[in-house]
Image (tube, rainbow over all chains, first blue to last red):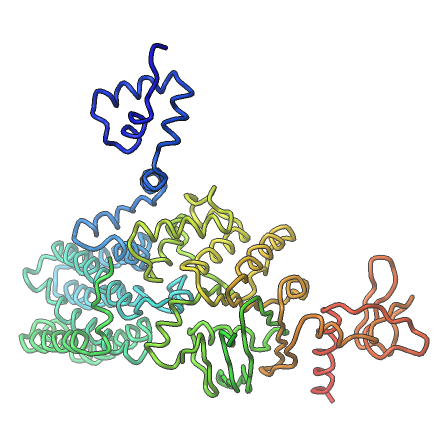
Length: 273
Length: 286
């Protein structure tokens, strides 16, 4: 050993101000010299060491986002919101598989049927899929951490809306994909506006009742209306009628306005990092 | 020092059940135990204090704030840790992910500081070695500790713990006692339990609830003293005893009004509690 690190060089190396060549020499020397390792360690600024250690810890054991979280983050959702969304019961694989099974039966029935009955069946089922998915987005009996969530300062309505938007997007996209297998032109998409209108009504009703109860009420109302129409054999005609589409659009827009403009909903639209 | 929680004449009714019938309680810094048989109203009171439920009548002040007011309620929630009786979990999450999820709900930001806080509370409940494990893969006791870690997030001024030691083995219970005792240093902890030993070991104050009413408020030693002169051993069960059981060494521990000549023994908190609740049940039956 022909030389040792001077205190000045140790300080420069420890605080990062030493130039490249001397730093490389110091690193090579430290591998073989206990005394100089001690000197450099004593010069290392504690704050910097703590922040480096915290950075390492963050890189090593911070949770890896799930694929749902990564996808949502890529779509512009904040990582915190992505985590809250990933926990939505109706975004779990089992729920989605259930919805896909229902849709595949309805779409297969429509595709196999030679008359209008198949299409009628599909148009009866399809509007309900997003509503049922939304029902599973948040609620006392379906959210495992409901009790704890209620005791936190996080705005419940914001959580509910986040979940509903995510679940609605996924379920509408799924239903639209299955609609492609129904050979009925644009008629196969006639479920969309009635479905959005029903989800809108569900959201407005959540001011007075829990989400699953609101969704259940809307589904029950839909079933009654369909039963009444079925007695007159006019389901598909009604679904297709321009007036029905316009009414659905109006209801959806009105409900959206109620949700967005209501002062009590302001906290729901705060952005969380 | 003013109490952290002041509850005055609180009532709560569920359909045909009067869960709370005019409860008045104060909770101050340290650990306060809440004892009572099933259906006494403990969980209802805790849920009200955790702002999950609103009372039908009476008043609650928590940290000087009114939980009936929406803004105050949010401020209370920022200073509150709550461990429910049956804590649910996003079971697909790892321990870290679950606690981080609750940390997001507690509005801890930014992410880096939040993660540091998550690590701190996971270390506090001694689960660092399993922080990457799925919650569903943990034992019941470990899951309770995960829920306690979530309750400890943000160093809350008020901790509401509903039967945190239920279903734990003796070693886990001792570990929990240590955690709760530490948590009670400098903050108010309200602990509901069926375990009188936990109350005797941890609490500076105890409240006994029975059928929605407060039967007793005071120190654990005061509650134990209620049974002074009413506990004696005999070879057989004494017919005058309100409650009696055979102990491991074959003698019978009798609680009630002792016969002449019986030698009283030092009562425990459990004796005081059993006599208090037993007497009230007898009054109700009469």
